[in-house]
Each structure stands twice: as structure tokens, then as C-alpha cells.
Length: 140
Image (cartoon, rainbow, N blue to C red; front, side, top):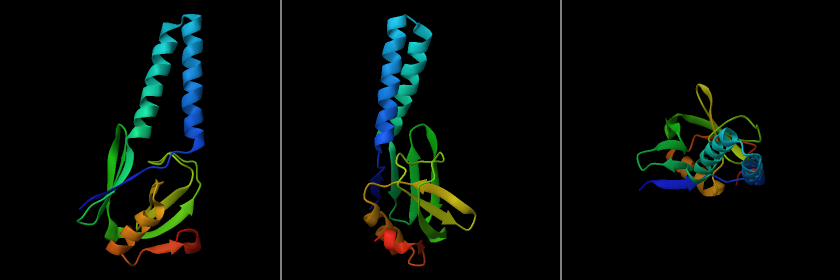
């Protein structure tokens, strides 16, 4: 059976949404319809990302990352070589800076931020016990 892990959402993401709402109200007060439409569109995309960012570990051993309107990313868990804790603020399918860098033979494949990190890692390790945990004391 497939297992779904929702992304953590950090305080900064909620702050971003609050700031977008304030900007939208300011644009409404100034009567700038174009700004209201643009900010509402950006806010809708940010909320959609918050509600639809998750990771699926499939029964047949694949990891699928989903984030809003962006294309799904998929990798065979057997190809994952290492997991490393990271706080790199680069764009990724993660809504938290408390991230796990997932590396395969081609380098950094994805940064993920699953809510239930320990179960996520345990399940990956069940499919591929050879996954190396860099700084493993931070993981389990």
C-alpha cells in the first residue's frame, strides 16, 4: 500500500501568506484592480502549494514528490544513495527549511520536508537498506 507524507510548513510560509493578504488589502484600498488580481493569483498559488505538497512512497519502491502545479518528480528508492539534513533555502518541493537532501548517483535529486520524518526515513530504508544517512544522529 502506498504511504503519503505531507510536507511540514514553517512559520515563514505562514508569514508569507499573511504579507500577501496585507498587500492585497492595501491594493483594494488604493483601488488598484490589476495589483489585487496579481496578488490574489500569487496567494492562491501559495495556498495551493501549502495544501498539495506531499511525498508518496509506493508499494513498488518509488518515491514521488508532488508540489502544486509543478511536475511530479519520481525516483526508484533503490537508486537513492544518501540522505542528509539540510537547511539550504533553495527552491524545492519542501515548505520547511528543516529538509532532507535526497541524493542519487546524479547528485542532489530533491530536498523534502516530510511531517513524519522518522517514519519517512524508516520506510525508505526498508526498501533500500544501503541508503547512507549523513550525520545519522540527527535523523533517528
